[in-house]
Length: 68
Image 1 (tube, rainbow, N blue to C red):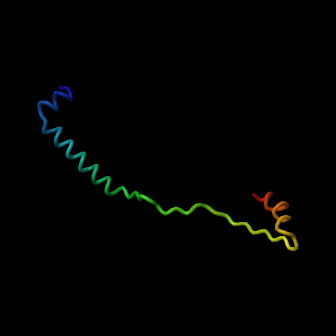
Image 2: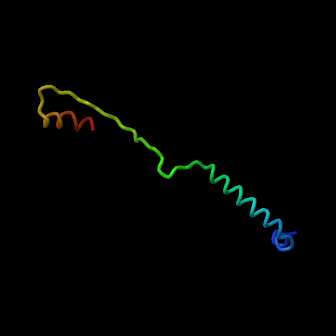
Image 3: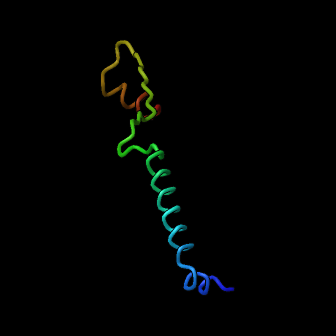
């Protein structure tokens, strides 16, 4: 017996299967635990360079551009 014949001759099987899949799908969806906007902290690094006696332009040209 083909699946289409079974669905036409005994529709109760199809109805029960549909209801079962719907209930299981709803239960799975409620237990999913996905958040719309999850908390996220991007990786960050901070570098401090001390160059006593140098002007800001000199620090930028000699150190900062090399570090970046």
